[in-house]
Image (cartoon, rainbow, N blue to C red):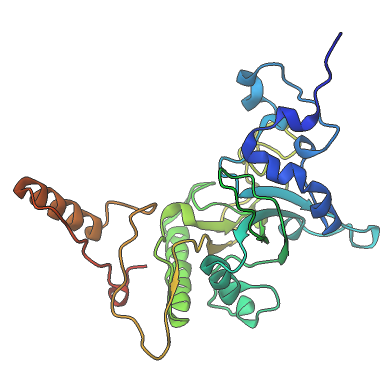
Length: 296
């Protein structure tokens, strides 16, 4: 007798959070891909075939998920920027959530500030959700809804002018963050993205962004950044810190996870560590990263 497996049984542990909350998310107006629907059956037979199939695409980071915003017939002409979104799961009351909404939350006047280049939060939804993590507690989660962006180098920069515009916007946005007494602390390449919708006439796949959303083939831009300028955004405020406007800040601890480890602060720390290891000292204190010197 053939055993019929449920859609849930085909998924990885890291995906169950989203599968189990798909109906609630749909009530809130966000529909997950067919992979996360109750009646889903894989189009592949072996795990090795997953990269070749649309329904085999999954996010590496379990706290992220893509979705399509439900639209009514009267608003069927919604553009891709607001139609296709990314859902990010954050702990309720976390510093990352507070800083994210402080900089660019929905209905926050700062979101429309011309110098603000923090990824805009389109919506914030929360409830008491089960946490599929190797811990017994079940904390309340908050999900922030963000636009679906592309990596800053995809497609690649074509001219010096395009590169200059990228850095102009990044310096502008970084100053805005610092003016709020906030340090991003992880302004690496992976945390700078762009709204590339002006460059494409076809929707790209949220996970495999080199292919069309309907998986009918590769996707290529129809315009360059010179022809259709784009806006760049800082994302991921997981390492960010906000400081009091009264006390200010002169220096902050270095970030030892993520980021670019080739910057001078890290190189000095590594040299100091090697020196202390050679001298067999029991402890080593890291050098601070200085915010007022321009380090994020």
